[in-house]
Length: 169
Image (cartoon, rainbow, N blue to C red; front, side, top):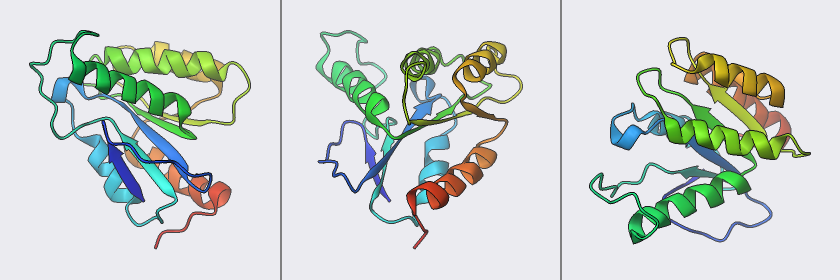
C-alpha cells in the first residue's frame, strides 16, 4: 500500500486503486484514526493508494483563506482526491463537530445520487451530534454505516479481497 499525505502527489496509473480517508481531524484535536487505517492496510501491495489528508506539517495558525497558499493547497488537494477516489472511508469522531467532514459527505452524497461505482463506508458511532442526519443521508445514498472503525476496516478488507483481488503481502 502506498500512503500519500496532503499535499503529496504521484501519477496514478490504471492499475492503482485509490481510497480517500475523510473524517474528523478538527484542527488536529481528533483521534488519529487515519494512522489506524494505514497500519491496518500497510500489508497490501502498492497498487492500493491511500490518500490521507492529515498532513505532518499542518500549522493551525494558517489563515483559512483562499488567499493563503498552504491552506488553499490543502483544501484543493482534499477535494481532488476525495472526488476522484474509488473508495471513501468517512470516520466521524463523536467528540468532535466535524463540519468539514459533514460537508464532504454532502459533496459525495450529491455525486453518488447519480450513477457511480464508488464504494463509500461511513463510521458514525452513537454519540456523534448529527448521527441522525448522517444515517439518513447514508440510507438515501446506499452508503454502509458502521458503529466502529474496526467494523468498517473488516468490511474494507473483505471488499478489497473480493472486488479488487488485493491480498495482504
